Figure 1 (tube, helix red, strand yellow):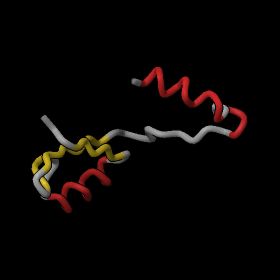
Figure 2 (tube, rainbow, N blue to C red; figure 1 turned 135 degrees about the horizontal axis):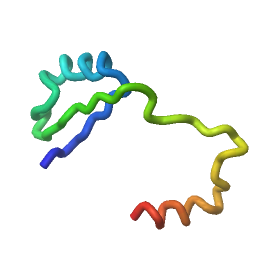
Figure 3 (cartoon, rainbow, N blue to C red; figure 1 turned 60 degrees about the horizontal axis):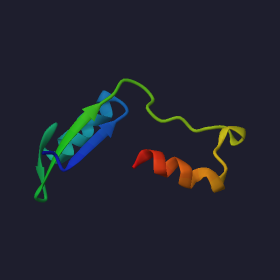
Length: 65
């Protein structure tokens, strides 16, 4: 089982991380890791009018559990 999944937004970023850690998968400081490279943006910021009101965040967290 992998302890850490490192998600890079670009393959070039994934390669830089891999060169620092010693490969696309392996062990670092006693923990296993795997680097996953995506193609393009994976996170997008919302506009202020699209954000969830603070009093509804608890409802969203309940759905994630």
